[in-house]
Image (cartoon, rainbow, N blue to C red; front, side, top):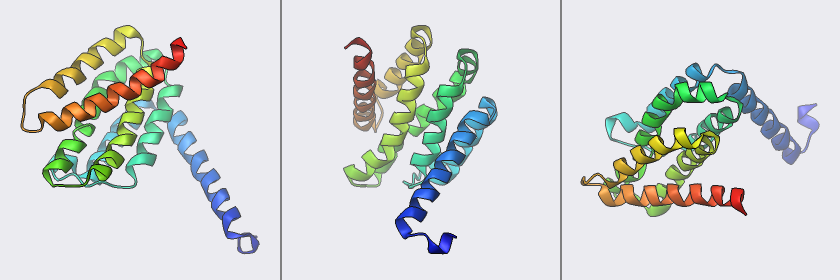
Length: 173
């Protein structure tokens, strides 16, 4: 049957199956296990722990699973997972800094940063004000701390803040 289908139809079926698998992983997994697994895979794929960040095409789908999982988590589960998620996102947002030290193009920096920011924005939209405020202050502190990569962190923080404001603007309009 698969051999007789046109290529575009095969691709559509494959995309549908992959979306179904992603949805199943995001909604059926235990949040504690999912968060630690995604953190571990992200670290291994990107090499961010070693300071030798490698941009990878798998970052987007991996963080899409994490984003989708936030929608299915209860507020209590999200509150429990907030400390490991915060440390993960602070580490993942440092990608621009690590890439700039290797003289990588701005486009590649943006490509590596976009899925992280999108996942963090979906987390923020699920949080209450009481949960969001400490997270935002921690990110602000991370971005404004004077280091060698201060400028890149500020760009990342501005990008994140702009994306959050864009999503929250929809709530008030």
